[in-house]
Length: 148
Image (cartoon, rainbow, N blue to C red):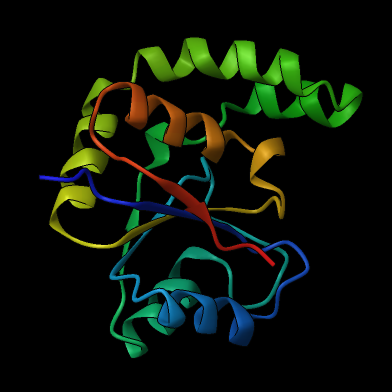
């Protein structure tokens, strides 16, 4: 049996309408929020508003806070924009998040899942590191980023 495809999506520079359309176009059933703090200055992307907008589209919402980037790691990245340093620190953090990774793997096995974070480019975001770890664990196959 083939491994499930995992989608990722960042909402930076994306209207809520276009964000929801991308999820619809790829038949995403569950959005897993990988932000430590599910808040946003962008209208519609904070936890309650986003979960309600998704629900109206028939998409489930799950916030896995444990997969968020810890505040000290985020703050260091904002200062130096060194993704290699973020990757090293986040990889250590991710190693201690087996329960959240297991839950995410179960969600992906049950339906079409998209990992959500802010950054437009997955290669500059911790969601790519989560996706890679799930591939290494044999829980997902292909990873497709839906960010425009």
